[in-house]
Image (cartoon, rainbow, N blue to C red; front, side):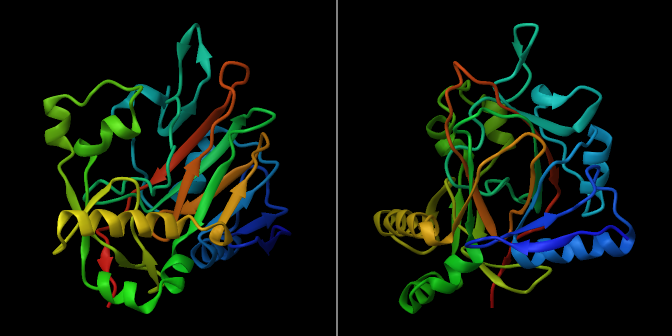
Length: 283
């Protein structure tokens, strides 16, 4: 049995203190880690020394893995690992630059969003490049009753086509085929977690419309909910060190990358991603 403890973080989340650096756990210990992930939403690990195979193996114990497409920035020989950051090899980028800016949950603009993601720091700048995590259980719980009543039973439309150029101005415009491949989707704003049964506020940077509302009213409410979810009292800031890793639950958290001086420093992160499930409307 590994000797590790689960230490709560503020304002939410937890750190797994004393985890084996390869994250190779017994069945019993892994069950403890998974339960802590479901309870806290994010788990922080430090001083890891994982191979790509170990990174993949740990994540696969949580569920089926998602392969990011297109595969331009998947790790060679290990397509389950998505590389983000400004690192280069032979003068060519090996990761997606400026990934993750703006609060969101991974895959929120897809019919089946990703259940979770596990980001591992390979190389990080000495300053900047932090990641912010927002507690969406806490956001829902803190919403005033009149706002809860207004969004109860409603869905939001998430649109990659409408907002791709806004969030990824440095990337090429979507082709007509890419637009066909990423049609708009509707997801419940009050989302029931399939494992915990808890309700989370589900809204993010790809949301453009609320079901049954006039366009202006819907956009105003989306703006309000997005800002509400980012309230500092519900946001954990992770300041990365090499060997850190954070496992987050996309069904009840959001995250946001922060800038760093990319002309001076290199940031390289490896991410595995979990397949998800169709979002459920909270009762």
